Length: 276
Image (cartoon, rainbow, N blue to C red; front, side, top):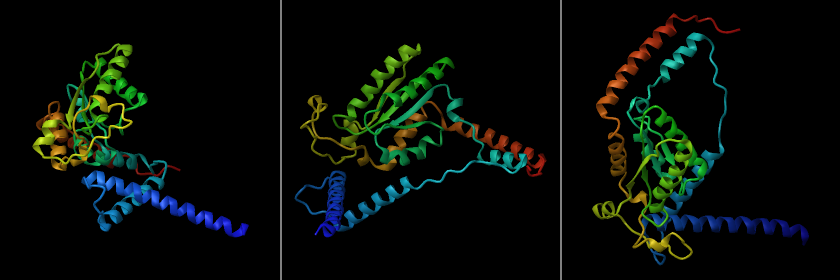
C-alpha cells in the first residue's frame, strides 16, 4: 500500500496544479475581455492563452551566455560599424523617460521609444525604491549637464494605477533633494477619463474589498491594454517629440550613417591578421 501511495499523491498534486493554472487563465481572459462569470469561455481562447503562457515560461527559462570576442582589429571595427548608433536622447535639450505599469505592453511601446533612444521603464505596478533610485541618479546626471527631466507615465485607470505617478513624484522629490538636484516633471499620459470616453473602452468592476487604495477612487476600472495599439504608440511618440523632433532625428541619423561609413573605411584599412 505504501508503494502505491506516492504515485497517487504525485498525480493528485499534478492535477491540482493544472486546475489552478486553468483557473488563472480563465480569470485573465474574463478580465481582459470583460466576460461575466456566468458566461462560458470559448475553448479556443483558453487553449491559445495556455499556449502563450507555456511559450513565455519556456522563453524565460532558456538563455544562452557567451563572451563577445573578435578575431582581429578589422573584425572589431566591422562589428562596431554594423552596430554604431548615436543617441538622439543624448543630443536632446532634456532628459526623458517613458514609464509603463504593464510588462505586457513593453514590446509595443518599445517600438517607439527605441527609435528615439528613450528609456522605457516598466514598473510592474508600484515601483520599488531601487527602481526609483536609478531614475533619481539619471535625473542628477541630467541636472549636472544643464538639462531638465521629464517622466511620462502610462498605466491602468484603477485605484493603484492612478496613484503610481503620485508615488513616483513623491519619492523622486525626496531622492532629488538628497542629491541636490531639480526633481523631474511627471505627467500621467494614460489612461485618463477622457480617453476612456473617447475610445469607449470596456470597464470592469473596481475591486474594493481589501484594497486600501480604493477609498478615494470612484467608478469602474479600465486597463491600459484596452487602448488601441495605434493610439498607444501615437501617445508615446507625441510626448517624445515634444523634446526630440522628427527633423532633429533625421539629421542625427544622416550624421550617424556618415560616421558608420568612416568606421567601415577604418575596418578595411586595419590589419586582417588574426590574433595568435
